[in-house]
Image (tube, one colour):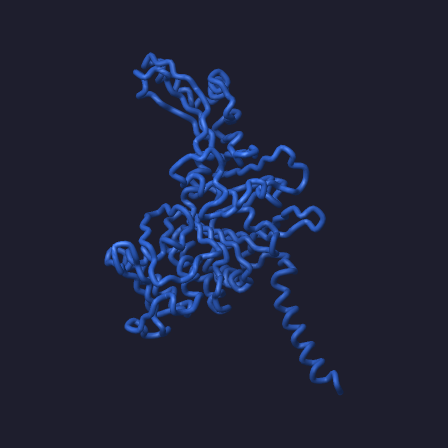
Amino acid sequence: MDLTMKIAVEKYKSIYEKKEITIDGLTILSGSNSSGKSSFMQPFLILKQTLEKQYDSGYLIINGENIKLTDAKQILSKVGNNKDKKFSLAFTEGESSCRIIYEYRKGAGFIPKESSMRSSKMNSGITLNLRMKHDEIKEMLGREKEFGFMDEYAKNKKIKPIWKTIKKKCFIIAEYRSPDKKASFFAAGVDPTYNLERFIRSIIHVPGLRGNPERKYQIAESENVFPGSFEKYVASIISMWGKSRSMDKYDLLVKQLNYLGLASSIKAKRTDDTSIEINISRKIKNGDDDCVSVADVGFGVSQTLPVLVALLVARKGQHVYIEQPELHLHPKAQFKLAEIMKSALDRGVKIIIETHSSLLIRGIQTKIARKEIDSTQVSLNWFTQDEETGETIINTKAPDELGAFGDWPSDFDDISLYAEQQYLDAVEESIYGSL
């Protein structure tokens, strides 16, 4: 049985008070513009691009592939009294939770200040900072039985290791090592935020800006873990699937493109040692032999391919974060995206979407009502903004067995009825107003 996962953000941009959401199954982030939807996921993507750098810059990388900020101060919350210039992230999995606090340093940016871990198996948990000394760490860990084996092993080997805290890119860990070079074989440690790091490294990020369609794509091969944003891997993955060992996923991709009304065939092949071209059928039916470059068809194809490929390539338990999956899609295709997501959920993929599409959400509700998606797999997190303070407010709803979310936000779905009524009123006034 999978353990329930939750992530939380505090004092980041408009999110001042701690806000927490569950990220099991299908997690929907929606709401008005500038309400904090993107801000909630941003700090996790900042950690992702910091971890994936081959070097340790000493501070968080705020300008990278996933997130592009220009000044560390843009992160600081302007809500409330945040004079200490900190923000924090938390991750919970089952009965175990961890938290990391980052502090702004002038001229450097954000660096980790404190990491902590709590668990039902622990007496009082673990809290680390970079100023801690050996005795302080030893005393704290001595209260937790599960770390006693380290001292016992060192004693048997007649080694006298010391504890010290060190910074590991964007995290703080405790290292247990002997200063004696002859005992360099002995090394142990404690990483309070291991589960958070594991989650962040595994995220497949499909951004809202997925680039322009190209006639040639650079080869970018990877398996399971995809550093940076995902769109650059799409051509290479399709090319790999086109080979016999992965034809099942290739066939599924073709079926999904056809189901959405985008294409009946897709081909990806190497043009030289460094590039791959993607060709798409011009016709929805029987277009295998009539293909053109993806750069010569509708923009919706190139923007939807990363979404479909990400959901197909993700392994069981892996999180796929998609910004605006409905981008450049016809309303009918937006509604049908619910079926694509259902297929991924059936394989155990965990999906986080940020969307403005009421049609996509209605499609998901329809799947729930038809018992094709379990209502317990879905959560709607509705973001609004406090009109006076500007602070982000998150209203989380779980659908019932018929797919209803209860009190549906008035500023979302009702606008369709409002627009329809405004049009009918205008027509009536135009016809009868002059009589």
